[in-house]
Amino acid sequence: MSRRLWLTSALTALVACAASDAIAPLPPDELRAAPLVITIAGQTLSLEPSLWRDFQPSSPPNGRPLVAFLRVRSTDSTALKATIHVDAVWIANGSETWSSAAGEEYVAPGRAFYQAVARDGPKWSPGDRVDVVVRLREAPSAPQLLRAAGQLILRTD
Image (cartoon, rainbow, N blue to C red; front, side, top):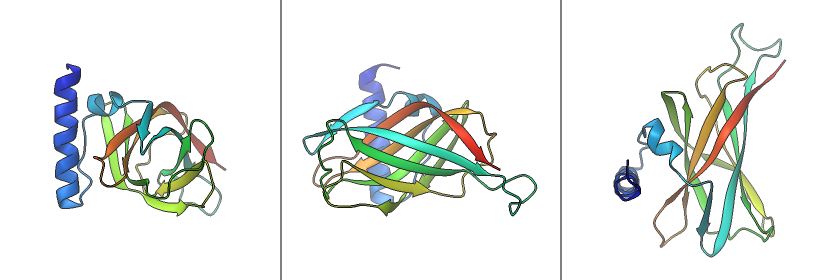
């Protein structure tokens, strides 16, 4: 797919999401085309996700659903602007995708990162490598997608 066609498609999906406040699914190919680094509100940002499935003794026999901790970091270690927010996450595992709203867990003034979380994901296997994409918003700018490729799903025992 050409870059221009992808951008048009992605922007159309983002506008539709913004209008409905729903997290629309996106095809894995579109998710994998999202950039690894973006500039928003004058800051260059990257994504550092941490993905876990819980298999501790108190868990169900087949483990708990996927939890995604989504750390957005300023690449130059400057404090993130308080106006930047993650509101959605998509995770692509092969031809499957999962989408969810992202809740902010930790935002602190003066920090070069903040962390959001998405819970109750699929029960994909620990050891799988997936692509994680978040949607960042900073009014009045258009939302942007940011990706971390080949992220390992870990497990707790």
